[in-house]
Image (cartoon, rainbow, N blue to C red):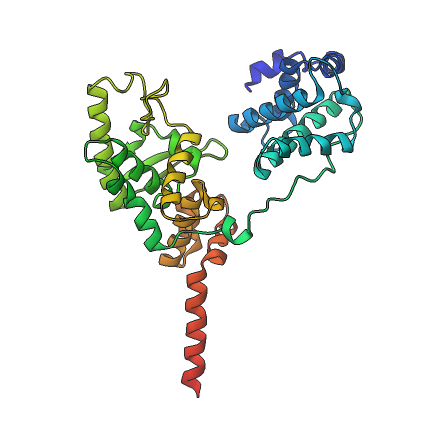
Length: 350
């Protein structure tokens, strides 16, 4: 949200803020409540104007679903008169609709932020979502933090070569998608945000739009990624010539589905769906589905190869080396090696 929009917002002037917020909450006016939320995020959140667009969109989806629960048309529940029990019932409703625990946590955070904005505007006195606990994610911790073994990663990154014919563009695109996560260590949003112009093969590097904070970073690329990028860029150029990709489409990875998205930028959902297919084929449990498994794999293998957390932090774009320390804890193989060395040391002393 730009400074100009903040200055022109109906919520900028204190005398208007309460009146507009009270009316919006009473009428369950989605558009105005979202304007209040964005104004609050820009002025009062930790990141202020640097709050990512993804966060704003996720919180907007949270508020939209919350108002649907309250009964925006029937006004079944008054937004500013809800208590903890009402919020907990909303979470139960989300669960009954099959919403995953991770998404429910995001929805809850969005509504908490909405109430903080209403309190700031003096349209509410309490935050009924503040003390509510989100449902616990039943996924075992060891699976949520698992990384692929080197052999399994190699199997998955090569799987598109066996699945598709030589002239099928998915054969090249899917391998690159997996390698960008598993070798490049990119986040899901970073992968799908890459443009063709972000790739500099001659300099062996790519420019990445960070999925956190909107910052850019330049990362080096190794031989595997260089080869995959070169192959895909050739395939992609051929698709352009055949008119399969719109002239104004800059995305590196594009959808190859026979629908309206064909030739357009691959979405995060689409990328995860592609990765899921290869996980299933490799016999992995459902809990490991997702592109972040590939990023964890890159981090774990980098640490195993270098034992240098500063290198891991730099290549994966971590703000602090403390974040990278998780890969040292996750690396089971390194721990096994340490135990073997301990046993050998003891044997040598006997």
